[in-house]
Amino acid sequence: MEILYRDFYHFLKEKTLILLLLISFTFNAQESFRLPLGKTSDKIKFTLANNLIIIPVELNGVPLSFILDTGVGSTILFSIDKRESLELKNASRIYLRGLGNEEPAEAIKSTNNELRIGNTYSDDHTVYMIFDESMNFSPMMGFPVHGIIGYDFFKKFIFDINYSKQLIKIYNPASYTYKKCKKCYQSDLNLGNKRKRPMIKAKYKTDKGLVDVNLLLDSGSSSALWLFENPDLGLTVPENSFDDFLGTGFNGVIYGKKTKVEGLNIGDFEIKDITASFPDSLYIQGISLRSRQGSIGGSVLKRFNLIIDYPNKKITYRKNRFFNKPFYYNMSGLTIQHDGVRIAKDYNIRKAPSRPSLDFVIRDNGKIVTNVLKADASSFVYSLEPEYKITEVRPESPAALAGLLKGDNVLEVNGRPASSYQLSDLNDLFYSEEGKKISIKVERLGVEMKFTFYLKKVI
Image (tube, rainbow, N blue to C red):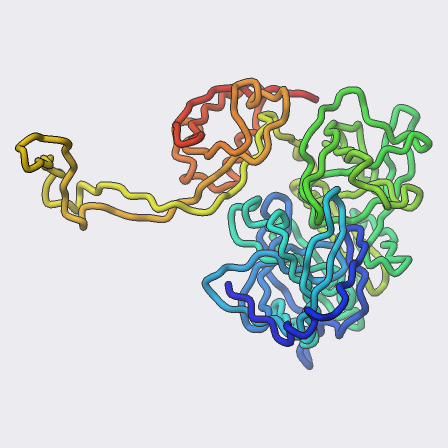
C-alpha cells in the first residue's frame, strides 16, 4: 500500500524529537471514539490467532486488520500492503524507543485521521507509523496485520470480550448495568500514573508461598506470563529453565529464560503449571521493578471471558472452555515466519491435450547440445504460494542438533509442502507431544536438504 503523507515536507527542516517510551505510548489525549447518535452498544467479531485478538478497522476509508492490545497507549501502524493507497494526514517525524536493546525506531506521527471499528468511530485520530521492518507482525502471523490499538479505543467504553465465541460487545458506560455473577471475580484495574497501561493484581506461587505481584494486562502478547527477576520478592528463575528467543520489541529481538512455574492465582481462580518467560535484565532497563513485576498475556487471558471497564477501572473474569487446557511451549527450538510468496508452476495433465514432448536443440554443426520440455502454455497452472523461513534456532534444541540453521527456507514438513500449511498450523506441530517425529526439507544457498528430529521436553 502506498502511503501518502500530507504536510510531510515541512518537518524535515525541524529538529527531530526523540521519545523515550516503554511499551506503551503516553502522548496527549485526542478526540475519543464514540457510538453513533442513538446507539448505546455495538458488537464486532474478531479472529483469535496465536492467542491475539485481530479486529477489522477502517483508517481513512481503507480496510485494515489491527491487534487489540491493552499494552499500548496509542494507535500504531507498521505494515502496509503496496497494492493500495492510504493517506496519512499532518505527518511529522519522531523516534520511538521501547522494549529491546537497539537504536530508537523511526516513526511518523499523523493527526486528524478517521478511524472506524464496527459502528464506533474517531474522526480526529492520531496514528504513529513505524518504519522498522522488525515490527511487522504479518510474517509472524502468516496473514496481514497492519497495526495495533489499545488505550485510544478502550478508554471510553466497557468491553465484554468473549474469547469462546470470538465476539466483543462494546457498551456506553452510562447505559451499562452489571449483572450478578456468582462464578465471576471482579477486581480493580489500575490505570494510575497517566501511563495508559492497565495493571492487575495477582498472586504468584513460589517455594515460599504466595507473593503479591502487579502485572501489566497485555492482550497484545501471545505469551502466558512474563516475570521480572526480583529476589527480594522471591521472583527468581527456576533451575528447570532454558535460554530462548522471547519475541520482538520496538527496538529489536528479546531473549531470556523460559520455564514453567507452579501457579498463578487471580482471585479464586488458580492457574497451574504455566509457561513463564524471564527476559534478560538488559531488555527491561528503565522499568520500575517496584511497581511492576511482569505481564500477563493472551495465553492466560483467553482462558477467561472478560469485562474490561476502563471508565470505572474494573475488570471481571469468568473462566471459559479454554481454562483447563494445558500450557504448551515450542519443543523443536524453531521459530518460523512467513517470508513473502513465490510463483509456483505446475503441469496440469487434465487441461493438457497431451503429455509434454521432448524437443531437441541442435546447433548449426548438427550436434545435439540439450533438450527441453515443450508443452502448450495452457497445460501449466501458475499460483502464488506462501514461503516460510526459519528466523530463530534455539541452541542445543532438537532442530539445532539436527543441523537446521537460521535463514533456511522451509519447503516441506512431514511430507507435505510447507505452502499447504497455515503458519499457525505449522507452528502447532512443534507444540505437540514429546517424541513426535518432525521431518523438514529446506533450501539453503540453492541446495535442497532434508533433516529429521524428535520433539523433546526441556521443562
